[in-house]
Amino acid sequence: MKTTHWLRRASCRPLRGFRITLLLLYLFTLSLSLPAQNPVVQTSYTADPAPLVVGDRMYVYTSHDEAGADFFWMHDWHVYSTTDMVNWTDHGSPLALETFSWADDRAWAGQAIERDGKFYWYICAHSKLSGGMAIGVAVANSPTGPFRDALGKPLYDDGSWDYIDPTVFIDDDGQAWLMWGNPRVYYLKLNRDMTTYSRSLGRIAMTEESFGSPAMNEREKGKTYRDSYVEGPWLTKRAGTYQLLYAAGGVPEHISYSTAPSPAGPWTYAGPVMPLSDTGSFTNHCGVADYKGHSYFFYHTGKLPGGGGFGRSIAVEEFSYNPDGSFPVILPTDKGVKPVDTFNPYRRVQAETMAFSRGVKTEQNDR
Ligand code: FUB
Image (cartoon, rainbow, N blue to C red; front, side):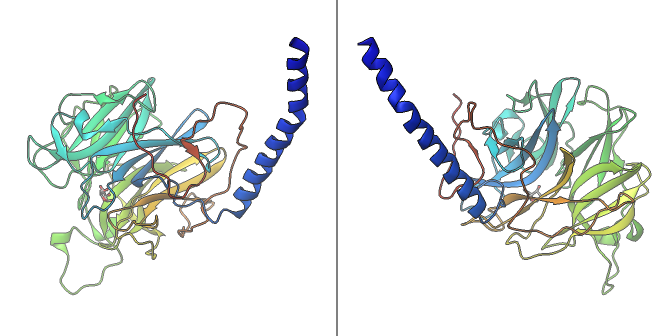
């Protein structure tokens, strides 16, 4: 019995090796023939990408459009991660409107950041308390959650509809800045705990010099302006200069940016980053990160089949900063980015890690 068993196993080995080689060859050929890496996620509609690098992994925090929606009726947020920029693991939805007892609608854009071993995810949602949009913050011990409401109440809420799309940035001196707003930009200097602040709400001067046009109610009728701030700010710093990227121009939106010597301003309009393109989405929303020696620009389109203005999908492009740290013009592509690392299949790889799929949907399973 023992001998027969050993023989059977031995005779199977070459065959199994052959099958594995064939499978790898098939996957390799498939990867060569794949038409595109964009949209990054094909299993559900994702919007408002916010990248975060933790160790050797790139995470992207997204909002989530419901299939077939006729407005941004959004209920939860999602997390995806990669180690090579083309194979993405779906971590499901560790944060939803139900996480916030004060929120009842519009789970819109957010951004996550790490501090002192904790992960803070700033979001905006409609507030039951004030009837406006409010800024909230969730906290977790890991980048994929589980997240809980850090305060049990909004971080900032006074009934304004301007309070959407928070961006968070920790400066070299340790000061954390939280900015948000549509159609004006607001900011708070956060305390070390990332959930409280000591000074009152700051308001960025909305001038023609700052954003290409003044605030909406101050624009001259009939005058053509260079550009205009709309929403979706992304605060970052390059070569000692603060950069604020944002959705611009009204509907449809493109992405532009401004620069400043301090997040509080004064900001100077610097030009377009992603010009208007035929992406099938009338909004755009960006996030920027460096990873494994490359620079990446995340944004969203309406290009997933069945998608559009209310069924958006995140996409990513690689770019190189200009020598002075300024942004080049970045155009949307279907091709997306190249892998920056090898993918090791000889480890536990669950089915929710994939480079590309068609006709596959994922759903939350807490196990
Ligand atoms: O996703 C809902 C809203 O659409 C976001 O908050 C805006 O930035 C725009 O992308």
